[in-house]
Image 1: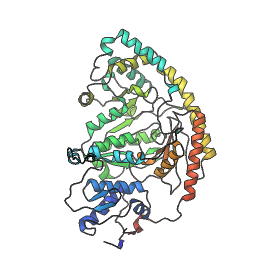
Image 2: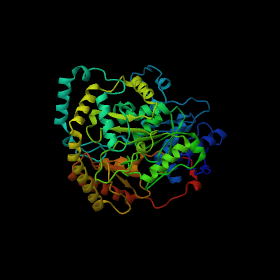
Image 3: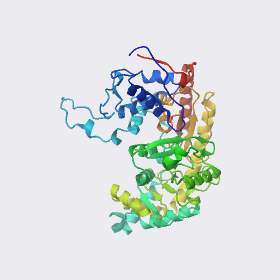
Image 4: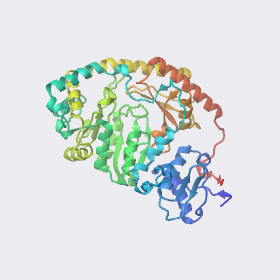
Length: 513
């Protein structure tokens, strides 16, 4: 079929991500026979330009069509309408061996989770771009080696292996080491969170904590609400479990309370990061927290609160009350990775009443228990007061790094780039001028020797303006300044190449190639 394709029927509904609207519009044309088998779809970049969106949105739409068997994609040739009834093949299925042998039929055997959008998203971000040896890493969200309390941890490991070898070197209790849960309970009490040790389940980092809670709540096809831009690891977990994700809009106070009855009636859970939100670095207001909890009570939708950045308060401002401190039905997730040592891989869940045993059973089926040695070492660390000493040493350093980065951004960013220095956490968000693609800036920045994290990793809604996340916890001040300078030069060059024309989505007409 040659000639013009009439405009796509995209309704602009805010209850459905744009990539799904594009996929639905194309699948409707395929089912009606307007696009017969063998028809080649336009290149993703051309279609994205005609719809005034970024290319990754169209890529996701095409991948969804591949998953559903409507189209096939061939590297170097393009995307073609498939014969109806053709079973979809996994996007990342292993290829035949070099000697031509077919081996196992992996394309049929792999699960849909193994070929889901998270892997495609990571593949797009990490595709082959040469990186200079002296790269400045503004994407690594972990403490620099000089800030790790290795001597104190070594002392604690030595103590527990000498005094508790039977406990520390064996399997841990299913719910977690009691002395560690007691320490966490005491620490949470200082934040106004009433959590008994019996309600706390120790996990391998907050990533496993979220995984266990998601497995408790979510069946394939269930609707999960998140902030429109949120932690990529959470998006990965929910998508691998087969959830339908919907990003809800946010303003300066945090996520806007859903008002759509259809949306609320279908939602299975709401995942939020109230403090030092990843990736934006902003904090939800107390008033918005109360509004979300009132909505949760009315709608019967549980809230998952991820407080990964607890204690990383850079300016000493009072932190708004945790959602869990205001409502005991909230699932509260915590971790020691960001504020202490990533390699500990110790996190926890505070469970609503009556659900702890079920969560423990799910977790035990996954891993048979988190390392007893690391749990006892962390408990010893907390009992000795080392965490308080560590934070007193590291928070001023993080504050100085944040300030150095903020000053450098002011000096080197071109007009149109927007940001606000965070008051908590270790990430800084940049909003790019309209027309710049975050993925393209990421690629160009890698070539220039600076690593950042593009918005494509964090967008749940496909309606977000493009942006970049910069982490300032790993690099020292002088390298943060140089990284901002390099990034500013990259963005300035991209602005000089920016096209001036634009068209609206509803008026888009695309040519066949």
